[in-house]
Length: 304
Image (cartoon, rainbow, N blue to C red):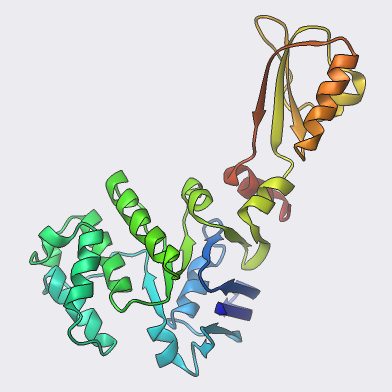
């Protein structure tokens, strides 16, 4: 079943085209990354998914419910953690979560509230007024509010921006558990190492358009950013391999080359040519492209 169906969504603010026909499907149970530089349209798209904004054209459905025409059903299926720290200073943590439960018509929800607070290390702050919490604790409460009605779809908009390592570890442990239990998770983040570790599939936005949409593994395989680094104590690189050089340098014990590769199968071909030329390899290292390499290449070229 499709958790989020985004069909040709367009949004313009006067002369600014924030979204230029975005279409993608996020399947139930996925851990999906929505990535892009500032101004790419990520927050605009999330605002439309959450019903905080309306598209000029196109549609968004959550578990089959249109976010505009069937907004009540769509809202019940969705939990959103926003970037901004938004809180009511007149309530304690527990009161805030009970109030959030009430928005969804949930009574006697204390057992789940207690579990959420426990998993986010908020139990000892349950009776603390929101205005007395640190920024990191307020961020935890935002996550708890998004989860209080057990939504099948969870959207995390920069959830770890400016927070400490402890919160990151606590958050990802709990979110990973929910994902394993079947919840769909959509993540936007500028911490690309987090996205690479957590997401199975990603979409990259640039200037309001999808410029990449694929599994993480497939993107890494396709990018021409992996390198074979060889240090040779004798001989030199054959002429037919010199077009692969990315960083020629001289080491203490011989010649060192970084050679661009697209597939692992190319490694054996390169080693065969080096052996045939009489080169002796003292040291070898395979350096794989990561999500940052992919992101930079796509943002520069607009494609992989």
